Length: 120
Ligand SMILES: [Mg+2]
Image 1 (tube, protein in one colour):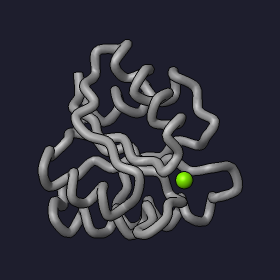
Image 2 (cartoon, helix red, strand yellow; image 1 turned 90 degrees about the vertical axis):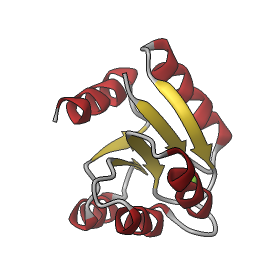
Image 3 (tube, protein in one colour; image 1 turned 90 degrees about the horizontal axis):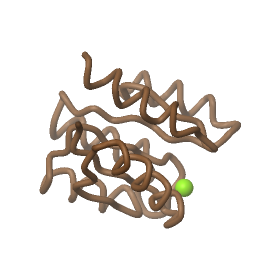
Image 4 (cartoon, helix red, strand yellow; image 1 turned 135 degrees about the vertical axis):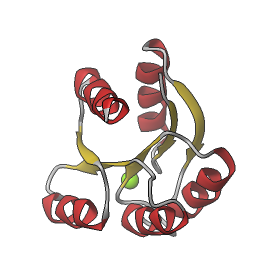
């Protein structure tokens, strides 16, 4: 079981993610719709894992990733990208993201990534 924060500017993505995670015993302790909210909510809730969309208004996922890792170098951030964002995924992994999920993702992929991080 993990305490998870979900970050995406699209509400329906967060609904889908929350549904999958809660059905499998994980706790969604926070959510956010842009990178700035993600940084603030990370500090407040210190989740075990962050699911971080890349393309968002205000502060994007890469900037939020960097800031969160400055605040907590041990943060587990998983990037959630759209198809065709391979370059951004590579950049995120280089910056310290633990893994990535490409949308549209399957529940199995999402849960496998969470389990892998919990097992580390
Ligand atoms: Mg987005």
